[in-house]
Image 1 (cartoon, rainbow, N blue to C red):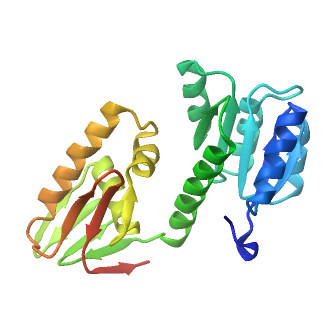
Image 2 (image 1 turned 180 degrees about the horizontal axis):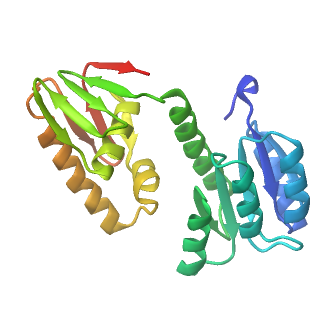
Length: 237
């Protein structure tokens, strides 16, 4: 549950009046400041007038559908998290939503508890990015230049691939804590399907090899949850 002093403001757009009111009441009960609008046009006007922490948008809405609304929002703000709610479950629709810049996509019917859990996961990730705009990490005896994607140890350096760099950066953000598997998959691979999960396991193995010269560094599997980077950490902005 979100504490009062850190209450998040949510733009909720849903044309089904009963569902919209239920969602708004549930989110408010969970400590969010949720504002409900019945169509995309009204939602966009509200977005321009107010500051929100997240948008939860139904796809099929009158006047302006959720995809168009998200596109308009992205013209104004590239960073605000967006979750789509929809009865559509075709892969093409899901892909379209992610191409626009969605952070998550939930098909109806869904449990409101699941929605809140997904929202909280996204907000934790966003807050982590805001708090961890780090140029260089010191990982034990290693130096990780996040912008150049270079990992150095003594006088040896290796240029990481983009996915290696993104994954190591996430591990650093969550250093000595658990990096949730689903969070890593959705952040880097967008989809948490079986094949992407196997791909991530391969990249974890590669990172272990890159970091093997410091015996104090470990990347451990946390059963059923994800991974934990164990290391002495330092940062440079």
